[in-house]
Image 1 (tube, rainbow, N blue to C red):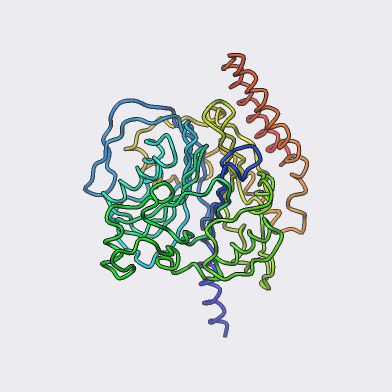
Image 2 (cartoon, rainbow, N blue to C red):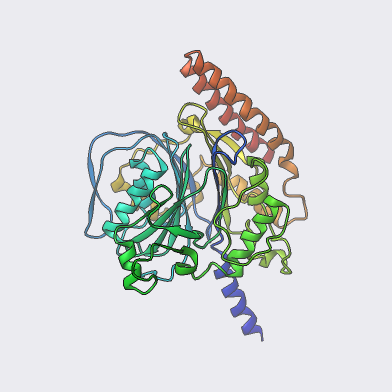
Length: 450
């Protein structure tokens, strides 16, 4: 009996270490015209987390992308790079055009295990380096997937100040992306969410070359069929309790009611109100899932879990100073605050001075004392705090209630001040107040830990 319990416990943990969760809010569904991208990043272990400022570069450099392949890099805009060392799919990027990307593992019925073949770690970085819009980033990523292949099923979510896209990768060389409607909210657990798609809809649907012939050849679609339900066709996980429980939890928190239908669920929902960042904080902090009869430790359907390494809510209005605002929770959001950081404050973080040739050895080869490698980062004091709160009976958010209330108000006041300075032609002053505000918000959060 004990052996059975241990085996069950092992598989439960393996199953529970991948509950990333993503939310995309169209610009007409937010209160101020921002496209919002929100995400909980879940990973096993205790990886180093760093934030880098990657300055714009020029020139041409060749680097090894995959074994036996060479890709040319032609420079990039300024970027903010949140790196999780030793992880292939956890890095977050946003560039100075306001184009951002995040990733969720999603199993595919046609997933092809390619081993070491195909592009993997560099895919998101290359797309963000080369794109000025989310649509362009999808197409850039798609070109690389079609050229090199991709080793598994996954969804890349791209957003910019005008629109959000969910790019479902089947594994191998095929993918399909759908645009989130401007007046809607998309919820993405770890399964494909596209519903009825029409391959003839070039405005809302993008896909790989030869997608239809591939699907027909492999028996997924009939000849000439261009309209079909994508999740039912290509996602084996769309009806699993692991994913649907978290989708239902988010739905209830956002709408105030239970969903009465059955999976596969709608790819997006329309609310009767404008969705604000603070409401999204609440959703991403949800743990354990409402209605679960499992104790907290085993609440595998929770949106926030003990494996959650960080969380963020990103508001995108444009590409001028003050138009990109990142609310970053540096550890589990159930116990740490969402700290406001304007994109202009990227320069307060360490500057990445390497090349693409340096990234793989720097990312995957770690020093023995891993925590000492990142003394500048926010992560460890907040992670320690989150662990202490997790093991205690204290209210995990008691410390941060006033902090978030004040900074939610101040962040938008500072943004309005920056806009007024820009209008008066005082660009340097506008950037300075955004940088100083962000640095102050970080230091205030650190001080409250003491």
